[in-house]
Image 1: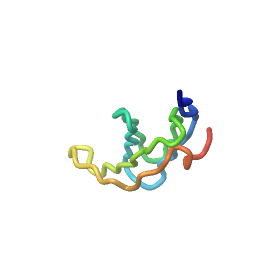
Image 2 (image 1 turned 90 degrees about the vertical axis):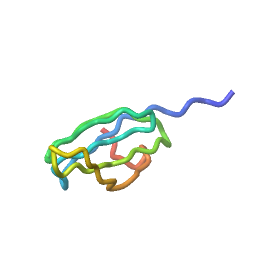
Image 3 (image 1 turned 135 degrees about the horizontal axis):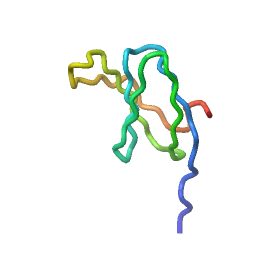
Image 4 (image 1 turned 60 degrees about the vertical axis):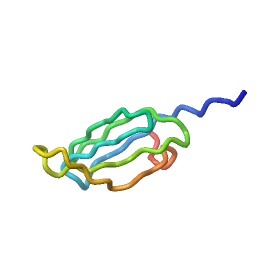
Length: 75
């Protein structure tokens, strides 16, 4: 039986975009306003999409990058 992936506590600080959404593999999302940092739980090896939202009245999101959970700084 394979061992489950390690749970990690990571952090993301939004310094570049008006609003950023972190989208996780399981579908949940975390919104972060510019100038704010948030901590989150993720699993080792999990892919997290970083999406920028420039206009709050629009539902249009731009994919900025996709990063592995291990690449985010630890809390």
